[in-house]
Image (cartoon, rainbow, N blue to C red; front, side, top):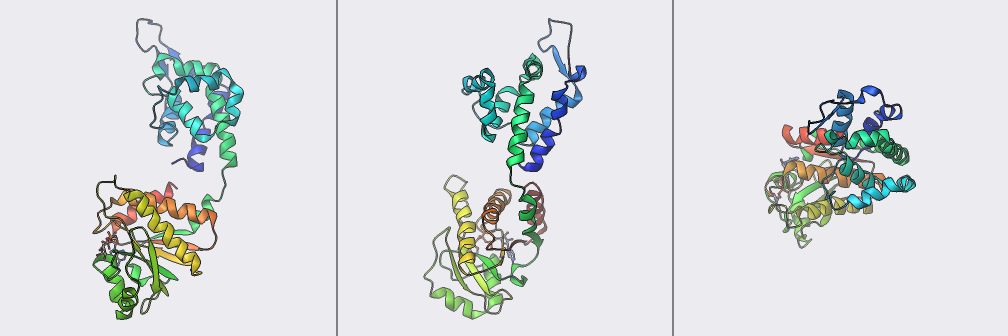
Length: 303
Ligand code: AR6
């Protein structure tokens, strides 16, 4: 994922290309060498940053080479290039296996790297600066979801909605038998969808029950179904004027969804939702163990 902060870290290198110092690279005099170009540590750091901040992507750049050349033959086209095109251009030209051949040196000399960075700077300028605000509306804590003082907690249920182990069992125990009675009347819930009940003896007024996908290797639509769980739970929250909501790490227990992958989906969905709606004030991710907490915490800081 490309973040405004990540782009800032790339753009910090821009002055280096506005006034290229003669020490940026050296050509070794021995022309029999396969790779006569040696780049300065500063330049190498720039290349590493492009990789680290996801400007170099995994795509078929060989097949895209003619397209890449088109941008350099008509530099004005670069002025309207979008972020994905810039990623493709960078990937095509800035490849670890190409820079020693002098390809990058040429791009420095004829201003092509600078042109790409200038366009990146424009795109960075247009990025909404609501990132900080959204991050403040997302909380990550380690704890027990049944103790949360929020308007609603989300339950990682199964399609029967009749209770089970894990977080589902804990929620039913804490809410008391009336929760099961209300659930019985709901007639189950398909994977990816969500249904709402009262919270009974819980501090939370509501419980949103959603059914996460069972992990089957990742090619059976598990990612989409998990994203649906977050989207549908948030939609129910809006419909019930719920302002604060706590999620467990849906599907990552008995259902076996890999924790990091699930966390990426959870954070991306919640962030996308909060950036387009103010209906929900804050979303809290409640991590049951330290491992989940560390992963959520680390991934939140890269948002
Ligand atoms: N508070 C917060 N998180 C918890 C709690 C708690 N009290 N207890 C467990 N977790 P799981 P799933 C975490 O297995 O993978 C049930 O039997 C747990 O560490 O509860 O979606 C249902 O009835 C894990 O990170 O749910 C279904 O049959 C996360 O909650 C099935 O399990 C989810 O683990 C659903 O499986």
